Length: 154
Image (cartoon, rainbow, N blue to C red; front, top):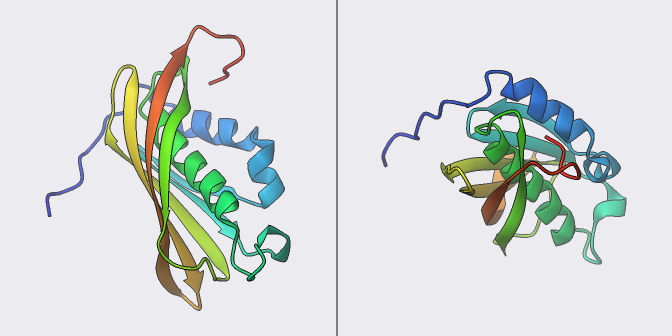
């Protein structure tokens, strides 16, 4: 397997910018998600298990996984963008590969191909139980760069 690409962020202050933006996401606050790592081209979001976020079988609901994984992917793309632009997901596909049962969950977004207008990102969601991880979902995301709009903050 080839080494992961090394990306150079366009904004040297990317980490503070993406963390501040993530902190403004009340949806992530509502579900208890936190950004624990932001590197050029990769972001990790963590989420504790909570009964009120489960579906009828007691697994973390797929919609919750999708929302947190979408944020990880979006912010991974954002780490490589200039400070004055934002990104929006324009498409994603999620595959649930195992029941989401664990004490906490790790969502990792990794840029595959950055671009000036379109960026492709892959995401992985892991359930963590007693220190062991299990892959529970994968995501493929397409992001669109948005510039010059007052309603899209950076």
